[in-house]
Each structure stands twice: as C-alpha cells, then as structure tokens.
Amino acid sequence: MNSQYLRPAFDNPVDSAQQGFRIALKAISEPGLSHDLGLVAELDSLAPATYALALTLLDSDTTVWLSPSLDTPAVRANLAFHCACPITGQVQEADFALLQASEAEFITLFNNGTDRDPELSCTALIQLGSLDGGQTTIWQGPGIETQREVALPVETVFWQNRQAVTKFPCGIDMYFIAGEQIMALPRSTQVNFQQEN
Amino acid sequence: MQVLARAGDALMSFEAELTAATYRRIRAPETGMVMVRGRAGGTGQAFNVGEMTVTRCVVRLDDGSTGYSYIAGRNKQHAELAALADAHLQGQEQERWMETLVRPLQRQQQHKRLQREADIAASKVNFFTMVRGD
Image 1: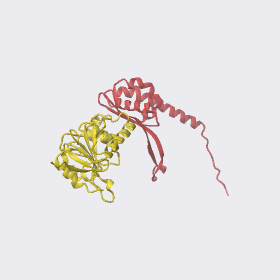
Image 2: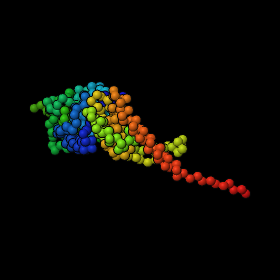
Image 3: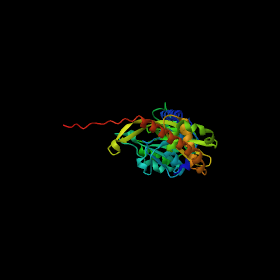
C-alpha cells in the first residue's frame, strides 16, 4: 500500500470539476489566452493547475502517460486514487500525457489520431515555468479573430515537433500550464514565428 | 469492517472518542452506486442482482494511519466514523479500540441477530405432505 502518499483533492469534487471543465473549455476555445485555474493545491511535481486539470479530465476510461520528470510515487498514488485512471509506460497508448516543456522530444511519439478517428488523439498537459518570456509566435486559427502574439518559453524544436505531428484533422491538443495559469493550443491553431523586419 | 459497516447509529455514541484525534479527509464521504452480482445457488453463472447505494470515505489521522470505509446506504456521518474507527484500529492502540468499540458492537449485533432468529423460529410452521397410497 502507498497510502502515506495520499492527499485530499478537491474540497468540493462536483463543483470544482465542473468549474475546471468550464475553464478548460473556455481556454481551448480561445487559444493563446491565459486563464486562472486555482482550484486545488499543488501535488508534488504537479503544478496546481496541472493537478486541477488532471482531477477534472481523467477517469477510468483515460490512459495517462507521465513523463520521467513528473513520474513520482506521490503523483502515481494520487492519480490512481482520485482519478482511478490507468497509468501506462507506453507513450503511444496515452489519451493524456503529462510532461514538462523541456521534454519536447516526446511530442512526436504521441498518438495523433487517424483520419477516421481524429478525436482519439492524445491531449498533452505541458508544464512550464511561466506562460511568457520566450520567443514571440503568431497564432492564427479558429477562436482567434485575426492573430494573437504569444511568447511561450519553449525551444524551437518544440514547435518543429508540433508541426511534425499536426496534419489536420489529426494532431495533438495541448494545454500549457504555469502555476495556476492555463493556456490552450488546439491542433487547429497555426503557429508562425514573427517575421524579422 | 463488517462490524463497523453494520453498526449504523450505534457508532454515533462513539463519535466524541473517534473524532478526538485530529484528522484529514482524503476522500470526503460520497455516495454512489455499485452493482451487486450473484450466482444462483452460489455456483451458477454470475448475474446482476441490482444496484445498491453505498457511501465511501477515506480519512488520515495525524499519526499517519489511513482508514477506509464502504457502507450500505447514504449515511455520510456513519461512513466517516467507520473510516475513523478503521484508521484507529491500524494505529498503536489497536487492542484498546477492539475492546472498547468493536467487541461491544459485535456482541450487540450478535444479540440482535439471535433475538430475531428466535422470533422467527417461534413462528415456524412445518408442512407435511401425505404420501398418496394408490
């Protein structure tokens, strides 16, 4: 038994999960805008918003993959206890993946769906130090009126890997998380680098 | 656990003792449904008897012991007290809790069961079928 790792989750499971879902939905319908998701305290290696999203989205029907840097006994025990989600060691099997932005090499391994069932692709929850302060990128697509400038602190290889797995309708939906802030990047958003003038 | 799960309101009289130690709710009491499965005669193929309401709860005492409870019905207070009792029973003072809590409840439940069996036995009727001699 690993009951010593268990911690309380949402104070009010039903209301908090509904709020969390509403915020997640709002975030992914407005790519590039950050939203507050401070419903629960942090859990070991998981930021507060990562844990809140996990408690909201994961259940016994969703297979979860944890990246090496986030995979701790406490995270495993609590996800298994509160979400009852199966945790897999196979990246390709995951419905949800929890990772840090520095682990961009895993992005090409995720399941990005098939033309027949694009909705079966993996959703990545990506933890960052902040949602600002990196190279400026221009986001365009559904949910953005003209274009939106976002400066996520991620490496260029991250965007290259995302480009490699995005073949609409196939692709990976992403949530970027820093502390209690979340920002979503669905597969339908095009990311371009700012043109040097 | 069987004794605690069956205790019902009898557990309420121990509320003060059980809640004396500080504790946290890992999983606050919550009510849900479980499917009860059965086998005809205990050996036949498994079939679904029906759903029943259960309430479950998990608590952790400050000394680190974790208590779990699953009870029939929707009595959240009962579920929490049963989980607390389970946690206490895993700690250092297991024998004391067995003596003051579990055994009295067990005796009480046994007494009730025997009494009910006796009541039923008194109303027992035997049916005889005469063998037709033809």
